[in-house]
Image (tube, rainbow, N blue to C red):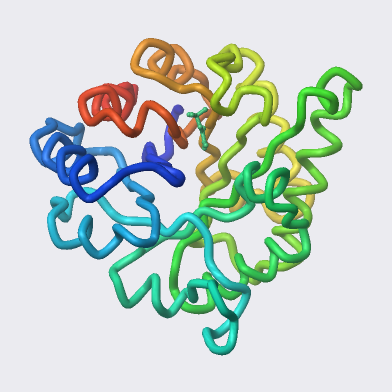
Amino acid sequence: GASLMFFVGGNWKCNGTKDSISKLVFDLNSAQLESDVDVVVAPPFLYIDQVKNSLTDRIEVSAQNCWTGKGGAFTGEISVEQAKDLGCKWVILGHSERRHVIGENDEFIGKKAAYALSQGVGVIACIGELLQDREAGKTFEVCFQQLKAYADALPSWDNVVIAYEPVWAIGTGKVATPEQAQEVHAALRDWLTKNVSAEVASKTRIIYGGSVNGSNSSDLAKKEDIDGFLVGGASLKGPEFATIVNSVT
Ligand code: PEP
């Protein structure tokens, strides 16, 4: 990334136990992290309180999902108010696992994003194409459509980070090349310029996710339009996550 504050998020997904999370927090608390990076971790809901009570304030906490509106009679859901009450500053929305495994659509995700922002919780807004989309030459089309759904739903981009996560790269070990990622990031920024505003395009962080690890992050971070990372598997290892954070250029 060239000019914006680097942002690195760790998405722990549905992993961990009280013990393993206590060890991960210990490792994160012991790590030396570059100061000019926003660092966020997203534990499973059930462990957010444990993490908030033990993790250094240097690292912010995110939820991995939220309900579309105010809490109430929605069995099994977690509200933005509750996430905020436990100290979450962010929520990850539109993750590919929620889109493609759980079946969430653009409109539902847009509603959640708008409600989270209305409550002062920042949104890590995920988008990304399937392998079949890329092979059909539809990468930009799919990503623009998902981005437009956020744009249509959101009153402001002030508290939003866009995470470009090609689905074929998530959890597969097949990281996008720096050139592949940069190409899409530049296209997304261009879309924001044309469809939202030049100001939003220049101020909004666009982070990359998909098999980022301690060995490939520094080459990706050198690309002009890559402003950070969303990290899954490698965020479960404290020292490796710190290496990724410190790959800021
Ligand atoms: C993710 O789930 O956001 C992700 C990028 O996963 P991984 O790093 O494991 O590919």
